[in-house]
Image (cartoon, rainbow, N blue to C red; front, side, top):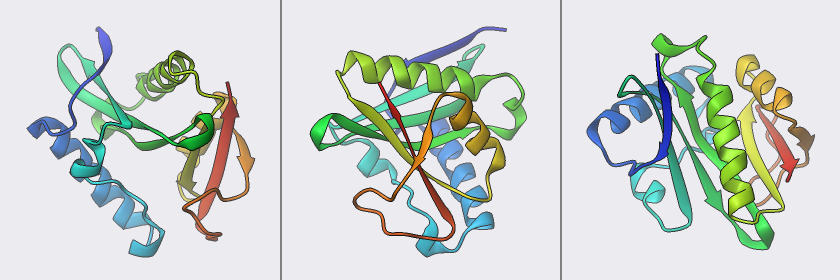
Length: 151
């Protein structure tokens, strides 16, 4: 088994299917006002670096790093196909995000995640992320958790 993680365009049909799986999963956990998902058109913007994980050539995961002012970036659209869970793909995506952040000269990477995703929260904590207050454009939401890792 070979896992490859590369920068790719998010407008590929198989990636769109993965993002639709992510949308459905998030909609099953949170009301619309607590879902802060970027659509494909926003993922195509120049300030977005979109990483895709492939297992033996098949898309099994993705995530985006959205550059922001002040040397920060935010992780968006982190998702691993449920059929590929348990293969440490999330950890590999996190490692790739951190390396990318360092290459971009970032001071920190931030994220917003939901409180009903213990696996994701555990992954972020294991990667060294710590809880912080909401950062723009977010407001306090009892269903959200905000985290950051300084690079």
